[in-house]
Length: 350
Length: 262
Image 1 (cartoon, one colour):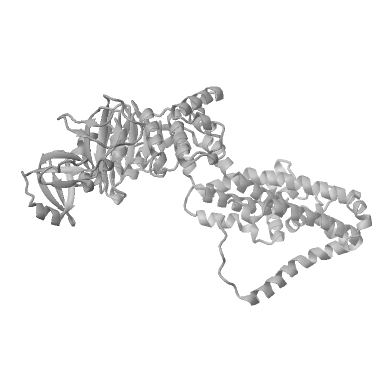
Image 2 (cartoon, rainbow over the protein chains, first blue to last red):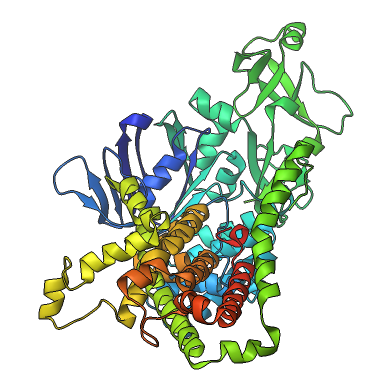
């Protein structure tokens, strides 16, 4: 583990432990108030817990609640913070913003600017170098903020819902930029969007009411959440396979048709299809001659979900009305067909 | 900025408001009408007038620099830290705003004067402060400092600390953050505060005459000169008064309150 975190904060009922292996990105998932931002604030050094220990690459950054108290100030932790708002320094040009980190670590002005240009190119923002932050759109500014954080060459990058304040239409571009810079980096990504976790994180840690309720490899947790909370949070059907050029071919040979979102996968490359359980219809027999995707599967469980019933099979789940479930006379063990329109399915490159 | 229709105010309120505005503006107009325009240039360029004007500009400039050097750290400590007795300290630091300047001058005299609190120490060091140009600068700084502290502290609080937090996470030490982020971001507030301090220093009378006296070319600043000329040469007094009015108008144009720290 390159980053190890353990902290208890009594007045916020927080008791969290987790680790990030070297070069991996861990997504902290959870609802508002679950304690995600508190964890980041403790890691970055803006909040001191009652007890806890935080270390990064073998160096203890924080140790409180026992002997040998350690509390390394934020600027000396080598942890860069990327928040919802880009927070580019308004009085500096984009280039000087990105060069700020290297300059602060004692690089010469020329070296710092060279590094700034390299990172701006990395996030496709080289053309903005001479501009003032006020001349950028939200998505552009956030990309520059990514470059600025990376240019500081942190040992750990903390991302606090980096997509939250960005327009939906530009989110894919930003997500791609993050994917590029995060590969091989040790990072913690706070999000409540399972899609961000899926595309950006190797592992997820699910927080609920200040506790870790589940953790594991991203796809495992999202596809087969063990805790009810993670299931509600993720709630996505997730199918991975290879992209044939027109549709996704699963391991069992089934093909899935959907809308490609973001940059398209290469033929023969890995891709995932996601769709919401609410968009799945359940039939006793596969509807003939339908352009829909259909999956013949066996029901493993039926759970009430408010006014709905969650019909679960091994890999998929569907939310249908109680009335529909009664009409179909569904019981666990029954073979049924799950059907979903191609327009409800999003396909992402992995 | 969006324009919103303000809630209606009673019609009668315009009358006292206009009365108040007239009360402030009419005396300024009166000064204009009293100026002996044909001799205006000669009046403001007489030896004593020139000496007073030059002394005023020099001392006000020096005290503005002092206000910045002392006030920026004061405002930063007040805005960015919290400690026991902080609000009491803030009230005391801002006291010169409401204190009669004469009282301020007396207080300075009993601190730095020959028989003052530090008088003996200063005498041993062979430093004589009272009734010197230094005393003028000290008196002006004493009354002008709160303007800078108040204006800058407001700017620091409005700005928040989000940029500073980001800067620290990028590895910048506190001094670097202060120099490269905090100060540039509050520069408008700092400039407004400095201009107000300069204006206050320029108009300073009571504390100066009490602590520094009225020696031509040494401690007799423009307001003191105007007060003296008022008896012997009213035309010169009026002409110099107009100079101060013009300077004040320029200063208000530069640092309107609604522009400070926003």
